[in-house]
Length: 281
Image: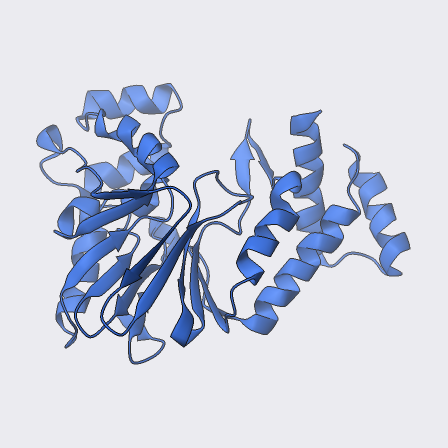
């Protein structure tokens, strides 16, 4: 079921047990724009059924926030103009060469190109896999792009991100809403979950320059400004305390600087920044 944020903005909530991210819909007077395609054909079809039940203009554009499989594998279903940044397009080009039969999928899992969960979802939720190929993007931008849906402007920007190098966010100025995709999350490298410490403050700066009251993240409930400000505050304080590969030293540094012990969120972030120090050491 779609959630309605305003008269022109809807979203389909994430479903973690199926690795389904939040999908967005922005409606103008002439056209509608979808944010992220879903993790499978079935996910996309379910979203489109919800859209069809609304009295909204036709979907003309589809924006992919980044080239992680759970955000784009449903892209063929929309019949829309597909928009990506140039780095996302480069990464999608590799997927366009993939085959999706059982033997190929197993080979990709064995070589760590895709995760086992990704393989299972592809098997269960993409039909006609032997002939399945991802379509090509129609609009490829470098840094930013503005789309007018008819009285409703969407600003697309490729930003710095602690999650992936190809993150695009979508800002709707008159609604003060920003779709962040997964940009504000960490990532996993060599089995270590980490936030890219060097990109944390540049990312926050890129996002906070937009005057937003509501933030939609790829795998979270909708957040208001106070919730996002707290998230940034905890991330920054955790990062500031972490200057080495020692978790013990980082926790002690946090206590000295804040006159208290780290809470559960901050401990999680500190551990992630320690992992980033380990990866870069």
